[in-house]
Length: 84
Image 1 (cartoon, rainbow, N blue to C red):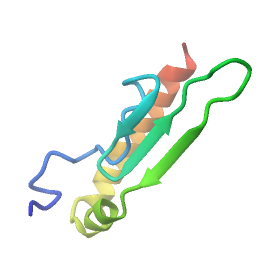
Image 2 (image 1 turned 180 degrees about the vertical axis):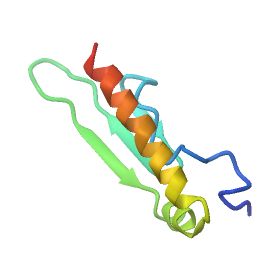
Image 3 (image 1 turned 135 degrees about the vertical axis):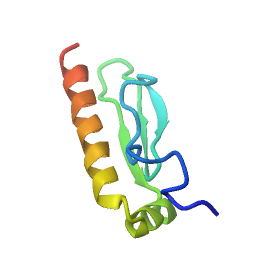
């Protein structure tokens, strides 16, 4: 099994919010499902932790910088989504 430093997961803990406006999105350690709005109801959103991947991530020597990079990317994506 590859460790996080050997794989291509660095900076990808969270799903890319800019891809696929509805449906499921995958990050390395988190998954989210964004529901479509239908009529007057609010969309349902769900965030899931991939526990095994998260545990592996926390053991990685690059976890702190990977986490910071992942958060930075998430904040930029949120800013772009808010500007639409």
